[in-house]
Image 1 (spheres, rainbow, N blue to C red):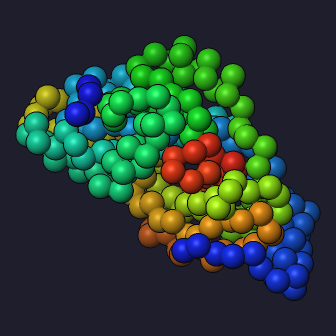
Image 2 (cartoon, rainbow, N blue to C red; image 1 turned 180 degrees about the vertical axis):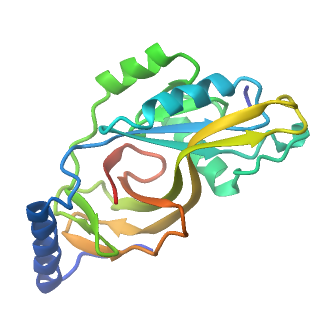
Image 3 (cartoon, rainbow, N blue to C red; image 1 turned 180 degrees about the horizontal axis):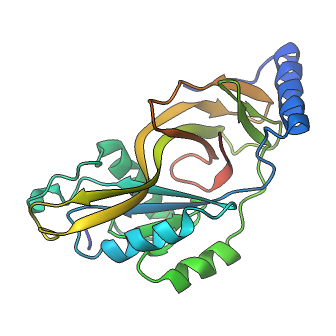
Length: 238
């Protein structure tokens, strides 16, 4: 379906602390050593084309090298069913991707891989091709532990990269739909994002950022991403 805290570089003492934390996490195995391929599905309970894409995300969610996330958008709510997981900020995230992906506007279902390439999410073979071809961008080391995100030193985009905190419900949840295009159907959703918050900016210096605690039952992921819907430079989960 188609629809028409900046943070400056830290001082040397703070840099040494951030680097020490990252090294300690790596030594204890708490760091995420394997680069994650981030697959974002933009979907809606009011979209009759979306159930196959939801099913494909379920197939991806347990792969250790993939962070699969479901973002429910709001622009189909007018069709008669208000998406129970939809948030305006999720719609805004999708809209920010479209210019860089060469799209004229948002649509569902859309799968975005590493913030860099996309496809309609209904063909698993196409998604598999993107995952195998579009490897994670070589970005900074990123570790989550002890209520903090430790980001290593590296080369940041001009103006810095955005650091996003994602709280999502791991696993599959079934949603009965009472009205609209999917009326009478129960739709499965995988790794549903419930909150998206910009923590700050990474400017290339090693830094640490505090992580607000997730609500009960939610998991935490952090994305370091070029601004304005650019490529994802690093991703990690707790």
